[in-house]
Image 1 (cartoon, rainbow, N blue to C red):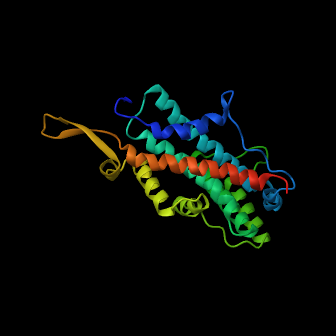
Image 2 (cartoon, helix red, strand yellow):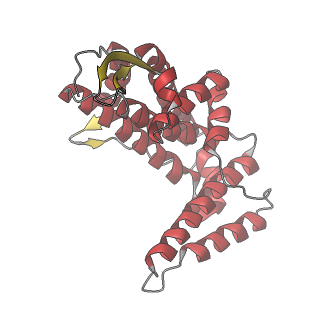
Image 3 (spheres, helix red, strand yellow):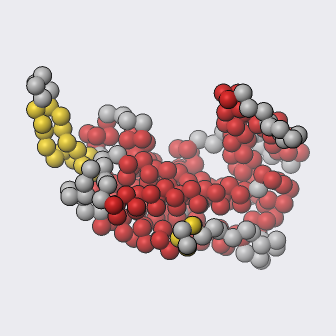
Length: 255
């Protein structure tokens, strides 16, 4: 792995944003919503299943993904796959943080938060089944938490909870950030292709640098990042990060 064929100057604005969010080896957290804020009003009946928890966690996770790419770049350890997968994670995180408080009306925003929590507890239940783990000390299982969340949604008169789909979150979050939804999804699909070791992204989003003949007549092709394809993904991440910070600050401050 080498940065010899990788310029990556387009990543510097995103990296500068990430470095500003670091302090003493940790990431600066988004503040808890003020008691008199619009976000606090959204979350008031949700108890431990508040949207603010999900938004703040998504923000921090996105920073960590983007910062991992920054550290790899500084170390000169760039490969054709990791930049795509790391920014894919950051994009999904920032998009989720934007999507949660962007629903049209308080009921829809609460439904989005509880839908994500319900999916979170479904995954927790699956892990508990896989490992045979049961909470001790009177703690609730993932299945019990899911039931509690569904009961809460019913008591609030919310529309049925549905498992959030990443592509639909991106389609909704992109316009909220002033971006074209189909273009954001196109970059995300390419990044997801690399994350799942698909063949087609190597043809659409990489550049060949050399072909090495093998003894069996099959050539091994050396690939590097196609910066023209990767640049939009970095730009989308930075735009969503900035919009997430702005929107959260506006919704979390006292009215």
